[in-house]
Length: 610
Image 1: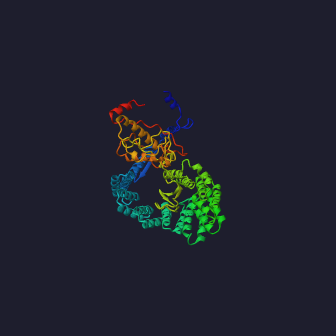
Image 2: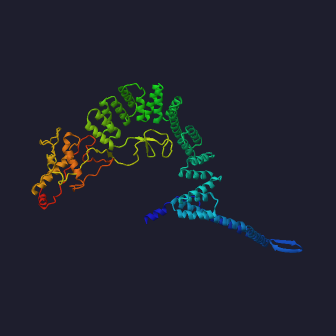
Image 3: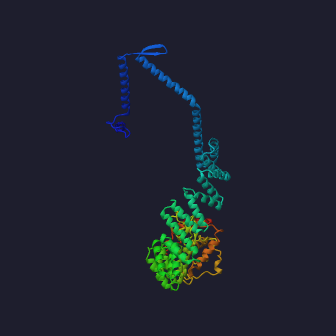
């Protein structure tokens, strides 16, 4: 109740203020004033009765003023009514025609709107029905032609769609729309010459559509007509199709492509174009790298260094580092290392800078500098970091660590590459080979945009083998030693036993009471062999046990489920055999107890075993 009274007490924003007169009150006042004026006139005439005499055609008519006024009013009203009737009769055909036209227009509008809705929802049957109604009601209307073309496209009738778009292109009011439809259909049937013709024709229109200007530009780029592409880009800028920033970027890309094509024939012109492109877009790596390389070959090393350093500060890239290191072809490896370190110091602390320094340090055999540069990126390395670490370990003679890093490089995340429309290229291209889009290539991770979560690389060089089965591997096949025993460098275990001989590989018949104990020892030894380093000299027994278990996998039942093979990218959970980023082996959980043996006596003994 309080809410209702409170709501009624609050003034509505649409209500007038108390001091402002209400519209109903104004109308009442006007009505009263009119009634008062009429009453005053009637009283005034009644108080002043007069006589009126009319003589016409020999006849005299005597009457009062009130009767004359009433007669005049009646004649006026009758005249108005008669004129209205006559006017309605005369205008009846036009009114009926206008009504039928409006009714037809409403029906046509309803058919077109419902047809467009059906096209948008993908209902080809309803779209065809409403298109037929629209064509019957308004066959030459622009919206009817558009609905007919889209309905034909939806139903897959390309010929009918092309015919309708051609009809639209022949009209002045739908010319650009028809050319756009013909352009789309030409692209669908891969008729690039016809598509270019339609785009060129639409680009001649007074108000150039965006699709036409961009299509002509891309077609000229695909054809390698860089001069024509630059001319089209200028027209797009003058027509207001692109802004100034986009114009500068695309012009820099086109000039870089033109400079690349002229580098072998007209080097002077190529240098000028590359320098202009580097000024227009300082972060365009191909332009700066090309300008630096051409300036360096021309002997202008200072200018080349300035161009590369400016681009490096904006966007560190391996192409810039390679061009900077090769400014003096006759320099030694240590001099190139010093130059690359100078370049890396001029930009932000980036992985590309560290990789460039590490590459130059490896070439100069400065292994400590290479390891120092790569150290911050070895926790979760990418492919290039892991490959450089493998090369570094191999150069220092540690073959085992080199194999480890090579295995990590196989499954590590990919490095950034020139990528456009899911296409990865070894070098930069001005247009995408997939879509023909200008300036489509970006230096990024090819998997960027896909949610993989936090990931680590998986070590594939030491997979977890399935546990050995007692039916194939016996205690004499492996070195039966404690779990904490480690193989020595000579191939003997801590207990002093050497590797098994060929004769000992065949299991000897055992009594039933000792068979289960031997099976348990064999399983423990196989699990220990799974954690041994298969690349060390003392890992022969482990490798034999692994081979025997793998060969018997399809014949014997497993004691437990075999771990799934890890994919190239896995969640941030270390696999049992993954030493982690720092190479420290994680603690292996206690093995699951073996299942009870098949025979009855051994099964009963296994129930009381701790």
